[in-house]
Length: 334
Image 1 (tube, helix red, strand yellow):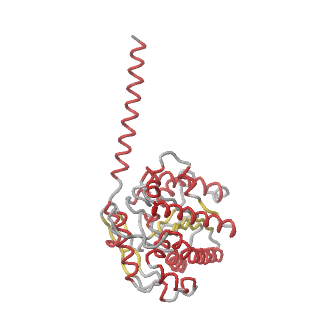
Image 2 (cartoon, one colour):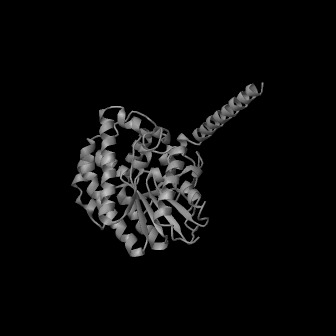
Image 3 (tube, helix red, strand yellow):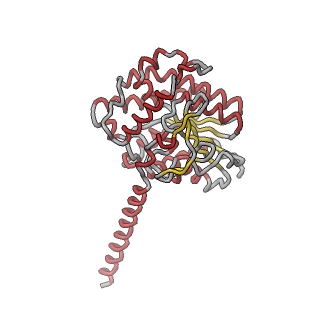
């Protein structure tokens, strides 16, 4: 009889645990909203070299754009003894998830377990290329300071090189430190890209990649590398520590057909170049590809082919927090 009751208790505990896992999964999935894929809703033109930024307001999907034109909850006025700025594209911005599940917010949450006064700014803007991130960094440094910069770029450079191949390739001033007008040409190129990104990530059939991925990387890498050099130089002058991150595409994206497989391989090659660049320049690189590849069920970390789900964002932010603690924060006195 006692043995029977013990089995009942064990079975009950197992079922309770299973139910809690299922409920947690449902909760995380409910955090994902298609509303915040609509980049056009909160994009505005700006009279700077980056051409467009974020429009302040509160939007469906729990998206908060603060008056400074950055995604909440952290404002640029929120500073600490150790402030981190994370700049990049829609991956940093948090396409598909609410404010509370963006990478910068979750990184701050993870770091604050040990360092309660650390602040992390979300300076990610959808569709931004490395050129725009570089220009944005120059703007930010005119009036703000911080101790660590995390950069996530590359994907949109590949997209631009693929979308506007000949124009991209023939424009030598992509490599020009003065950012001449032809770098972005006009708002149309970015509006079109934003629309294509939105349609693509909504899983509509659009001819998103028009050239072969190998050619796109061949065109894009000199641009990315040049911008990384400039970003590193700015950080050195301001005594700001720099960390780069790599890219990794969802496995189902890379395996669906030959074209997608080639794009997946190209993104892996780009990540390898980031790692090599970091090694050559003495810059630390957080290898997202390696972290995800070592994790069980990596496809659950994505809400589409590129952007992270709440589960993926939580896992990566925790791993990045560990990475930063070991390399930067060991001597930091909170």
